[in-house]
Amino acid sequence: MIPLILAAALAWSAPQDKPPAKTVEERLKELEDKLSAIEKRNRALEEENQSLEKRIADGKAARENYVRQVAGGWVKRYAKPVELTEKQSSEIEELWLGWTRADLEKPADAAGWKSREEAIKGKLTGEQIPRLARAVKDELEKMAKMSLMGFVQTAKISPEHAAAFEKTVLGKVGFTEDTLLLQAHPEKQIGWLKISGTVEECLPDLASVLSEDEQSRLRDTLAKWKPKR
Image 1: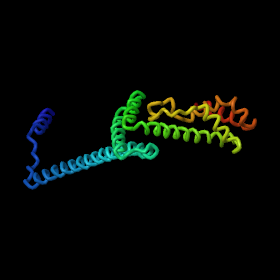
Image 2: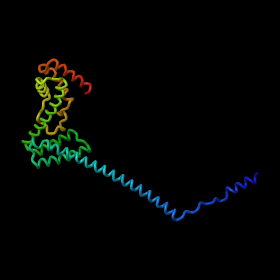
Image 3: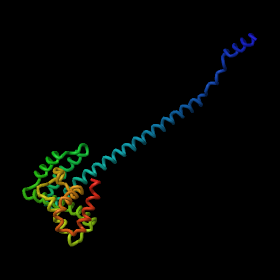
Image 4: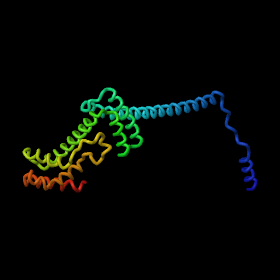
């Protein structure tokens, strides 16, 4: 038994046959395969980089387009009522371009906007300043009237009473012609929440303006809105 085990151990420890050496052609083929794989990875990385660069470029273009729309939009909206000259329009648009780019990084607070309001004022003549203030006031009134129209429709206020309803509430809001940039005076901005609160304050005054049914529907409208505030 021992001789058999010894013979098996000797056979196992004997040198094993080595695989045949690769030919030059086989080695070249392996090298070509490795180079091909590397080229594919490089192409894939290059395509990914190009796609990323395109997304970055598209993002920058969209950002700049937004900036120019904001700046150009403000000038276009007020150029006619304020009677801006070409030079003033160009200078004010440049201000807005810089402000909008800065706000994309860090939005300005009310103090910053007041400083900007002064910069706008510095570009205008003594006659143009009240024109801009009047145009801003007109826009606020327009926004308020649009909100009040929602109450007229929801509470089914008759056409005969709608004008008096609007006049009563707008009188309570109290628009003034002393604002050039609304962003500098957030307390003066018009929103649904502010208008609904003003309508509620005006309920006693509206008793002589609206019918009892209209007053009841108006109260119901306000009650439905309250939980959402």
